[in-house]
Length: 199
Image 1: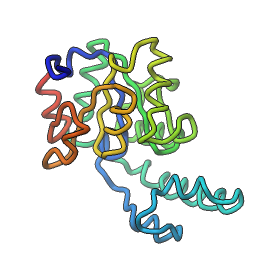
Image 2: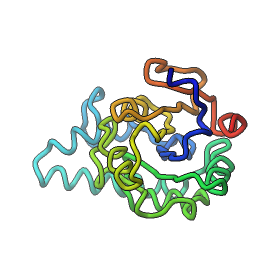
Image 3: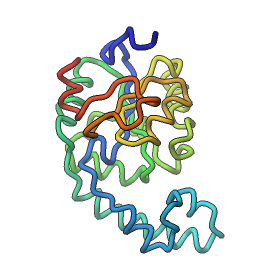
């Protein structure tokens, strides 16, 4: 059984960023409305399928919108203490986000965690096929020269968890009132603070 080990036994941790390490602020219905994207569509998938000129225009708007959010980012409950504890204990840490890599640096700087992540281990939507595709986790496994089963991903949404499952990594759900996707989750914690308490 996979559950016989605990999160602390895994030394390679990958974090989603927005809504996981930060307080969730993205208003996705508003973004879709501003960009004329159908309500049920995935924003990145929709934009990437557009002709080049339309794609560039919508991407430029999205980057500027997300830049403002990144500059105002606030850490989620327990996120700073959790990441700093793992770093101090010698765990390997990475970010895998559907956001832009440059904006990930701005966000991590805003919440005081940029020093905890090596730039090479921060993958955004231009460095890896966006989650739920497992490409990003597989890239990190290659960088670390470990198997995906030796890694875990911490996230707040089904995309993060599905990415982990497809890669063969362990998954942790945080920042939800309950375990909304039990079929995708190895461990569930209400927030990063309760996760840290279990390490």
